[in-house]
Length: 487
Image (cartoon, rainbow, N blue to C red):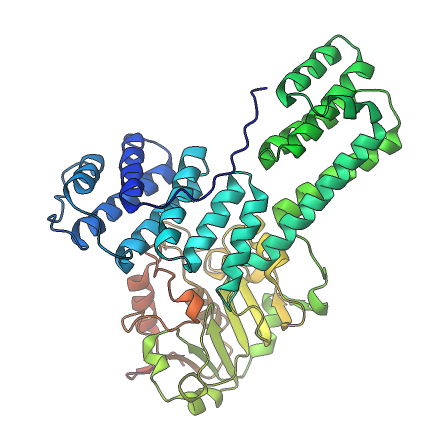
C-alpha cells in the first residue's frame, strides 16, 4: 500500500495563460493514445486552440496540418490572453475540454478539469457550468466535502436542476453518514483500534497485514481498523478509504468470529456503497406510477390526434398555442419550454433522454424515458423520477424504440437516434393515430428553444439530423412552414 495523500485541491487562482499552458502540455501527452476518450479529448483541445487563436488576439488561425501541441504552445507564447473576462466562445471551448477530460476518469485529466473550472470561476464567479464542472471533478478525485459545497453553489445559481444535482448531494451526504456509522461500529467492535488511530496510516496498515500473514489476527485487527480510522480523520480520498474498507472486510470474512457482528458491518458497507453509486430513493414506488408496455401505450393513443412540438426557435415565435392545445395529445421533448401563446400550454406525453432531468418535475399523463444502455437507463429512473409527476411511465419495452423495436442497427442507422426521432418512429410504427403532425420541426435551423438552463447544451454531432429529416420528408403527406403532417 502506498502512502495515501489527501487530494483536496483549492482554487488555483485561475490564470487563463497558465490554464492554456496546462492544456498544451496535456495535449502532448495524448499523442498516439489508443484510448477513445483521450482521442476525443485531444480533439476538444484542438478546437480550443482554434478558438483561442481567433478570439481577442492577433494570432492567425492555425493551419490544420500542424500538430495541436505545437500550435497551442505557439498561441500561448505569441498572443496575449484576451483582456477582461473570458469571451463566451473561449469559455465554452474551455468547458468542453473540461467535460471531456472528466469523462476520461484518470487523475491527470481530472486535475486538468479542476484547473479549467478554477480558471472559469476566477473570471466568472457565478458560472453554473464552472461550478458543476468543479463539483464533478472534486467528487471524482475523492474530495466529497468540497464537491458538495460546489454542487450547492451550482444549485444556488439555477432554478432548473436538470442534472439531478440535489439528489447527488443527498446521496453523497447519506453515504458519508453511513461510512461514519460503519467506522464507529468497527471502533466499538475493536476497542484497541484507538491505540493505533494516531499513527501513520500506511505504516500501521502494513503492520496489520504482516501480522495477519503470520496468523495473528488478534494483533492485526486493531492495527487495520486503526489505519481505517486514521484515513477517515485525515479525509483521505474516498476511493482509497473504500478500497481499504473492502480489503479489511475480505480479511475478516476468513476469520472465525461472531457472524452477527460481521453481517452488521458488511450491511453498512454495502449500503454506503450503494447510495454512492445510485443515490437514495425516498419513494421506491415513485408516487404509485403505473408502468406501461408497448401494447398498453398503443391502446392509450389509438384513435387520437397527436402533435409533436419541436424545441426550435421557430416554435417560440409561432403564435400557434391555441392550435397546438386543440390536438388530443401533445408530445414534447427533453428540455421543452412553455409559452402558452406560442407553444400551447398542455403536455400529455413527455419524451426525454435519460441523461438529463429537465422537466421531469412537470406533471404529465405519460412520460417515456429513452436510453440505449439498460443499466444507465435504470439508474436515471431511480435517481431522477419525481413521485407524482407522471401517471404512466414507459417500461423497458419502450426504452429505445428505433434500436429495440425497429431493430435498426448501426449498419442501417449509424447515428444515435434523437429523442424526437425515437418518439416519431414509435408513433409511425404503431400507426394508430388519424392525425400525426410535427410542429416547428426544422432540425434546429432556427436554433434551440429550451428552458434557460439547457440553452448552453450543445446541439450534438452524434445524431444524424440530415438522415432523420430525409426519413420524415419521405413520409410527409403535406408540408407547410410550421407543420409537417404524416397522416
